[in-house]
Image 1: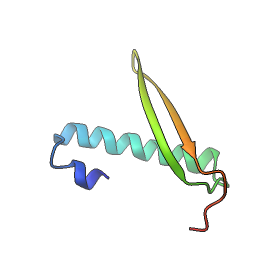
Image 2: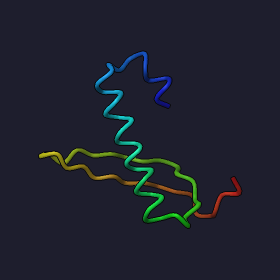
Image 3: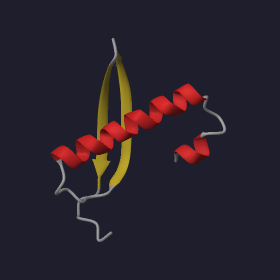
Length: 65
């Protein structure tokens, strides 16, 4: 995903996006390590003052991947 976006995003935005995604992965592994469902969709909403809300839709069944 980030590889395709590199052409249209400046280096600072790309670094910020990469750091945010890495934080999400770390949080997933820490709090939901046993959850193996696939993410179907997500929405990241800026709430202001540096706060965000993440909504995630996932598959109902565990993935075989």
